Length: 154
Image (cartoon, rainbow, N blue to C red; front, side, top):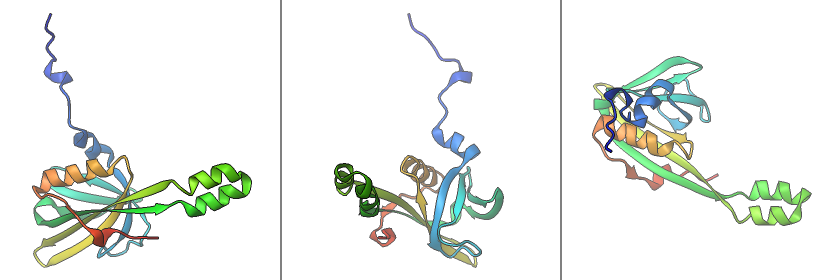
C-alpha cells in the first residue's frame, strides 16, 4: 500500500527553521563597527539578506546580492591546557586528552554594497557551520572557498 504525504506535512529545509531561530556565532574580527572580537552574535539567513543581532537588537544587515566572497577555514589545536588541568586530578585521563583534537570552524564573508564595503570572520558551532555555509551559499549563489587566511591559531 502506497502512502502519500499531504502538502502540510512536506519536508521543510533546515534553513527555513534557522531563519526563525538563527545561529549562535562568535565574531572573530573584521570591519563591523561597535563589535569586539569574541562577542556572541546571532546570525539570521533570510531569503534576500544576512542579518546579525546582538543582545536581541539588529545591528547589521547585508544584502545577499552584495556578497562578493564566502570563505571557510578550520583551526585545529590540541587540548593541551585542558589535559594539563585534568592531569593534576587524574593522570591517565589527562594524558589521553592531550592526544585529542578540537576544531574551530570559521566562516568569512566579504561584501560591497555601493560605497559600503566590508568583511568579517565568525566562528560557528561544529553542528552549525555546514548549515551556515549552505544557507549563505543558497541565498547568494556563490560557493564558499577554503581559506587558510581564516585559520586562527591560539
